[in-house]
Amino acid sequence: MKQLIFLFSILALVSSCGGGGGMKGTSNLETEMDSISYSVGRFFTGQFQDLGMDVNAAELGQGLEDVAMDAATISEEDGLAMMNTFQQTLMMRQGAPFTDEDPAPFSVDSISYVIGADFARNMKEFGISLSSNAFFQGAKDQLDDAESMVGDKEDALMQSLTDVITKQQEAEAKVAAEASIAEGIAFIEEKAAEADVMSTPTGLHYKVIKEGTGKMPTATDRVSVHYHGMLIDGTVFDSSVNRGEPAEFGLNEVIAGWTEGVALMKEGAKYQFYIPYDLAYGLQGSPAIPGGSTLIFDVELLEVK
Image 1 (cartoon, rainbow, N blue to C red):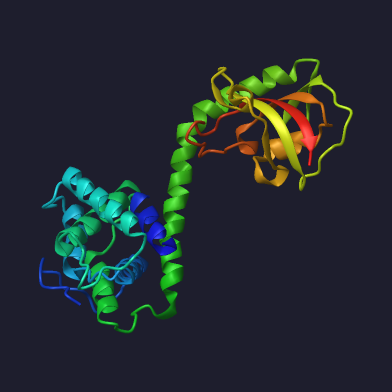
Image 2 (tube, helix red, strand yellow):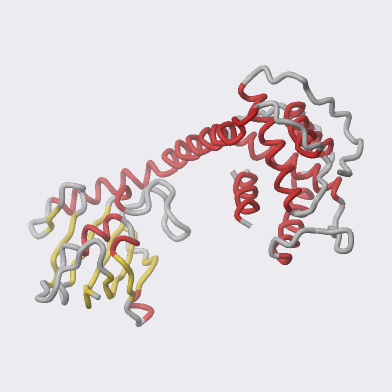
């Protein structure tokens, strides 16, 4: 299932291969993008072979080409519905391969086309245009068990594509988070001007509400705490206090601002932390926390385990 998860993570960013589509393939890989496209075609097809599916290489490549030419024969909405059904089927099977006795309950030709089209749409969002001929050739060579045209460079080429996508995602996340970052900087500057607020060299700021008298934890200790987490506008995103049950975890298992801040405390202490985004959830944020957010935490250290 690890490989399958990786396949769908690329789609979200990411035999009986009969006729179809008029794909011609290529005997030359002239550019790095040709080589990447070829490697991706082989990779996709290998994933489906692991599932016992004879993906239609021609339809896979045709879906990619049609989206590039704005000529897709299956709409994005219909394709998404088919992909959801496809993924749900695979999840229910828990990775068990399809067989002649237990075949796939959908058209392999159609799902091959949709996957090629869906991948192309995702790549378009990153300004990446793959070569449909090289992509098809890679898929066909994988099915035919032919020697790879890129030799042992497939993993490196796939990583190159992943790196391009990651850099663009980070750039987009930074732009989206600029307002939150600016608000956080202003908030931290206001707090830093308060007489009872202290700071560390990393940029963590904190206020001592109550000092403790017990043990101090190290970064590798487990601790029991009560906490109340807020955005700087007062929105509560997580609270053990509200749940009525302390939390326990290793200090090396949490965000950097927590690891550093709680290590300053003694058992029985209660601090308020002001944690800038780069010591919290970064530019990406989390489901409950916008990217670039500065966070406020009320933390009471109950016990060092």
